[in-house]
Length: 85
Length: 255
Image (tube, rainbow over all chains, first blue to last red; front, side, top):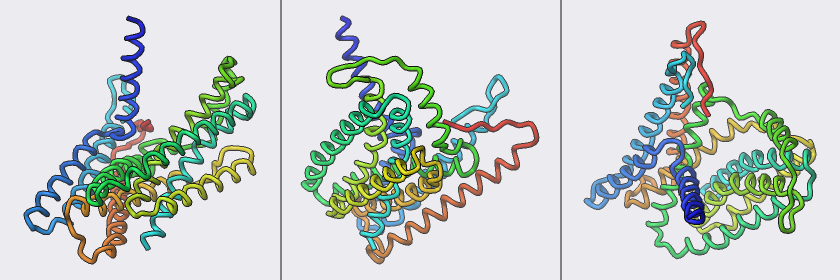
């Protein structure tokens, strides 16, 4: 039982490490990048010029992520101090 | 042009990560002795080399468009992460990376920890701390070297950029016998974030089937646009912070 528990903990830690390594602080960035790839591929497949999708999408994702983190950092917590994001 | 940017991006990313790893290794070596700390460094470097040797050639078998999609995706998630933190640091919402403070913290923790030996290592704490420092800081660089190198067919060139950075930082660190507090890490991270994000946009779009007007000549334009947007966001966040921070309001650094 103890061995099973330590294996499970090890697997969870391994998964958490790779999630943090690949996805990082904001999972919405990874989702946004995948969606931008999908839209680019769809347009390119239909013969529509699609080079502009990635820059527009990525810069919008960056802006949304930065502004969201900035709002979270400035939001005061219940005890009156500021909250880290 | 592409080769120069490739080496530059790998060199800068590697210099930043090597500076951070050096701080940890120096703190461990100075406070607990060098033998186990160096063993940890060697073990970490061997593990990273194994990852490069195993993954590098394997990536050359991936079809070019799939490779560009994979490489573009990885560079974008890494690059946007670096850039997001760099913008928050530059606008004062996240504490600046301070090697001297980190060094002091690591030295205190290392002196307080107990000493036990395992296998061929006389000080397990020093070994694991050095090993983790090298592996954790180096893993992202390894991925950058592999993805940049495989996509351009220039793994050796990318590895050379990384080796130059590690060599330079190591020599500088042992010359000053302390953390490299003068390395402008926060500015370097901003630059690396811009480069990784730009390459990620460029290769990712190509991998998804898009064609850039002007071909490779579009890459410098993408870099300029990403840099301009990042600087604009920094100014915007800083200005909105100035407006909100009336006397007495507390803004705290994020982790």
